[in-house]
Image (cartoon, rainbow, N blue to C red; front, side, top):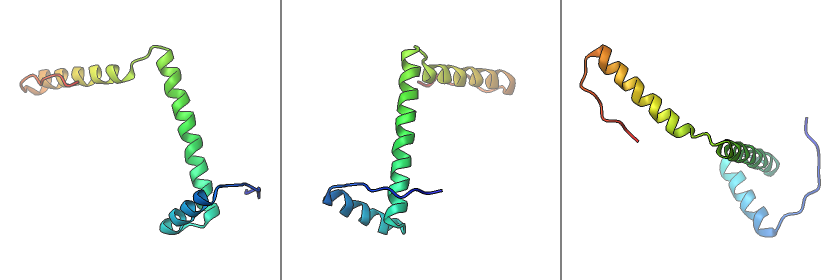
Length: 87
C-alpha cells in the first residue's frame, strides 16, 4: 500500500535525489521511499546498539573469545599447533 504525501525539500536535495534515482534506475518516489526506509532502519539499529552499550554488554569481546575457544578445541581434536589468539 502506498500513500501520497506532500513533502518539501531543498532544490539541492531534489537534484541529488533525482540524480541518484536515475543512476539506480528508480523513480524519484521509489528512491525516496528506499532512502527513508534505510534511514529508519539505521535509527533502529543505532538505538539498539546504544541500548546494548548501556547494558554493559561487550558482544565483540564475547564473540572474539568464542572464536579463540573454537580454535583451541579444533587444535585439540584436529591436532594442529595452537593458533595465536586474535583480537
